[in-house]
Length: 208
Image: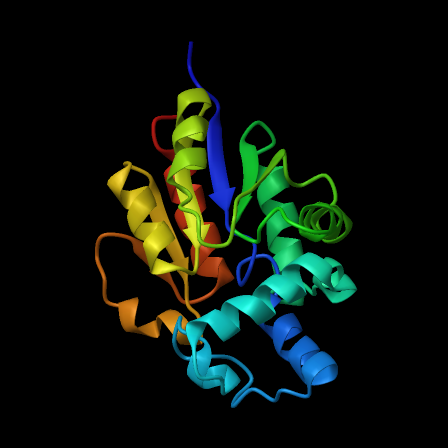
């Protein structure tokens, strides 16, 4: 029996502007002003102006687990909503999966699910939430057992490399914090969402 094809989407910085929401919350709640609109590195210590990674983790956990603002994050851009609906319409039989490392503690899980359903209604078939510093490998492995997972769309190099190592096509969306990977050839580095759409359509058409 042929497996259904599945496309896996990260949430933060792919579907939602998590860093933008986090930045605004830091200023409002803690009077902590980040050095620029968005970080240029995965390590947020310099961007936030804090001394240690454990301080970054503390603030992220507070934001994700306890703030109402985490449940009303804006889309990564307004056009992303249209792109996701267009993909859903183009591939009605595919499985659309959100896989996020936003954490399950506090109110984080219910707020994430509500936010996704509000901004992307009837687009996602499955939502999987793991802890902030947990690998996505376990969930990807389970998805591969059920589906033909054709791609992971993500902004984080560790997640992309995990997918590539499992035989899943990695699609990395251009963000200020991952620009150093733009010349990599073992995955698709997408400058924008139209590039993501093109790559997904190419992958979905294979074998048909």
